[in-house]
Amino acid sequence: MKRISLLATGGTIASIHSPSGLIPGVTARELLERVSGLSESAVISARDVFSLDSSNIQPEEWRVLARAAFDALNESDGVVITHGTDTMAYSAAALSFMLRAPRGPVVFTGSQLPLNHPLSDAASNLREAVEVARTAPAGVYVVFNHKIIHGARAVKLRTTSFDAFDSVNALPVGFLDAEGAHYHGEPVLPHGEPALLDELDPRVFLLKLMPGTAPEIFDWIAESGMRGVVLEAFGLGGLHYIRRNLVDKLKMLGSRGVCTLVTTQCMYEKTNFNIYEVGRNVLSNRVFSAHDMTSEAAVAKLMWVLGDSENRLSLIEKNVCGEMQGRPE
Image 1: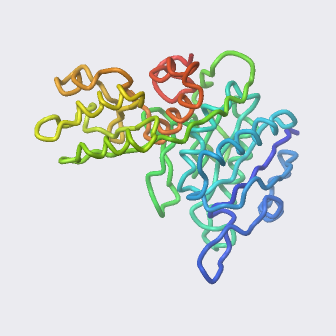
Image 2: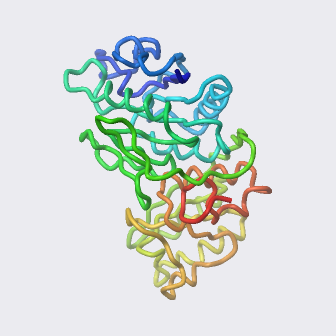
């Protein structure tokens, strides 16, 4: 049987009631013991990495989690990571960049309701994650409500529905039904030996534009020590330059060494600076297009690029791990 490592980080799937509300309180070993059938298809080891609400999982935790998954793949065929749903898409995207050509599948899952809730989706999601960790090609995935999603394409779209996650701008990797896991072909992974590339710079700011965004915000970004901005612009990548000139502010950030990665506020499809005059005006030093990346993947990628900018800046508009269209570098 395949060997699977279960890495627990807390989240709703491991939460219990307390006087102050739900808090993580179920260990990895308890998850393994309480969900029947897991050990029938794989030999599973269990380890607690954190016990956190996922709103408290930040870049520092991503590095710890990436190391734990990388090390686990030295002794296991696959890894399952239980994680809170609120920031799961960010963590999955981050590990997609940090785990270069992983030796096996790394599968994120969680639940909308705690394990002990009578309507909980925890057990089914965990069983399906183990099945994917046992059968999938190497890579990072999110498994939720029968969907298998690339780690850098997952987005949480719903707050209470069991169908919480979807694959944005890419088909799901596959799905699960009564016959098991089904895959839409094998993902194209980067070449080379497995490596842990976990250097990150968390000094990245995510800014969503609105009509009338004050240009002074960009002065604060420059003065605050931020090294990167993910800018959710209008449509294909537009921003206003009449009355409140944001184009000049982006050029100012570039002159100060700050990288701006421009994505779109639209959930689907991509940015394209070449269509409108306003888009062409944006192109300048250290202003880049996120193409069809999700905002979660753009944030994680920019932190990863800036973690070793000397070697990675050239990759900012290239497909590294499946986060955008094109063959991975």
